[in-house]
Amino acid sequence: MTQNILAIDDEPDLLRLLERIIREKTPYQISVTGNSLEVPILLEKNEFDIIITDLKMPGMDGLDILKYVRDNKRFEQVIIITAFGSLETAMEALSKGVFDYITKPFKKEQIIFTVDRAMRYQNNARESQKFSEIFKMPLDDAVEAFKTEYYKRKSV
Image 1: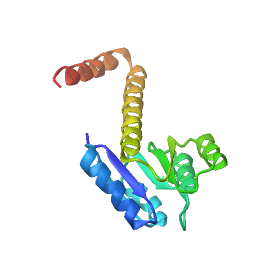
Image 2: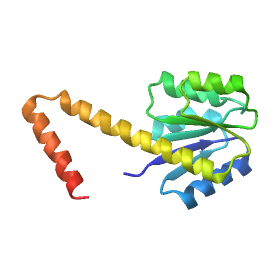
Image 3: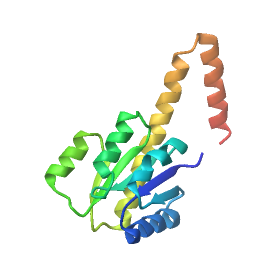
């Protein structure tokens, strides 16, 4: 399964840098937008695993995007990147459920590490959800579903 990232920033140079880092250094797919007001439309049409967003942008800022994701019970994990990092904004973002908060300037290794960690988290969340659904099934159906999962994993 392809894992997808949406990156949002009103600075075209930073957006190109993020896109290049993700494409060259990770196995993930990335979509980018410089217009934060496009985010609800992009999220309606696509599923992403991670959203990387700038904190301060015209239109929707990073906290607005985080709120949109949480209010709509979306699956994406949100990573906020900002040049305006402060303890107050970091604490606010963390209290609202941001996956991570990165200040600019950042090293590409920091982005790669954070994205990989978020993807592992997403994979674990999917696994947990899958097995939770199996446990809700009647026993005979659950046994068959588990066998299917078991054989799928054995063949990999």
